[in-house]
Image 1 (cartoon, rainbow, N blue to C red):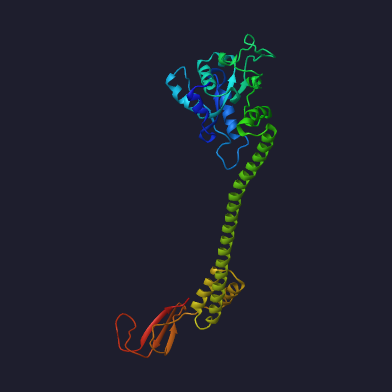
Image 2 (image 1 turned 30 degrees about the vertical axis):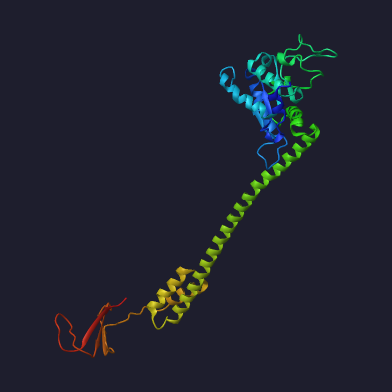
Length: 338
């Protein structure tokens, strides 16, 4: 315990330690539990503005399969404040777990060791210490290490439980046992803080959902109102145009009957207002009129065919001809009556 390297490591400040805990476990027996415990410790009583509550190292590779990993394991152990040992018969027989525990005890204190009993037995005899014969869950390096009865969290029940999350009250209580020394808070305070943090997170999450939803609804309502306003503006424009055409049609009903009819139809098509309907009915009651536009001057005479289908007018200017060829005489114009 008095080695220079040990003293050097113990002299490191807490700020230099990158991990709050290192989980040592049997990958064959407790891999699911180790992963769930790591995630739970990361999330338990986590402030809303932090990525995780604590940093926990868990090596999911097999040291026996790849001995070259030991250098990385050693650095992680040096950088950790606590060692969490998931004790079980499989862990007691694991070469990797035994090596991690020995390294920890050579360089750190058993006071910084947290035990979770996942299987087997851990027996203490008052006045004697660990019962080596009856204890099946601890590596050999720990059997004679404790001078007082070690405190552990009994996790043997987890093997029959599917829900290893903080939603499980029993698992949450076990996680709080480990989180208490890591966070430096009593367990009951941690659980209360976790409840408050959870409520705050839920409120923030709900706010994050409600705010965009509110903005979306507001934008939809604004778009609908804008569309309604546009349609109303178009309707008012059409009504105004219809009334203007109706007024013009009324003013021209005697001076220009054809144009008056066109304006009344345009007024009704723009918007079937009362003025537009009245204009259409007013113009429709007028007799049919045919405009003769071929004379430069006034018409001096007119005649109709026997059946009334032809109208012939005569003017007084220029040369005109009736029939096939041009002749000197009155200018002739003919229209088919309607």
